[in-house]
Length: 89
Image: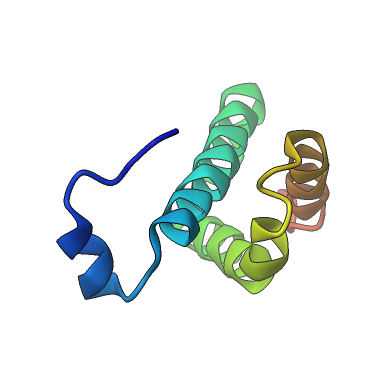
């Protein structure tokens, strides 16, 4: 299992190690998906598009954290989240 090397970092953030690692895994999955989408069709190029992605992600983050131990369901939820983002015309 991954570990945070310096527990003082978690203390400063007010997080338990398990929560911090779950957040990192969910964020990594989200950013990887966005990178894949960008490679396919230049998804998220402007500041406005990036803001929309961040806003969508953080509005769903708590729900997504509940799926961190279910990679398939997490992946589906992230795909659904990207589908709801405004697309370029």
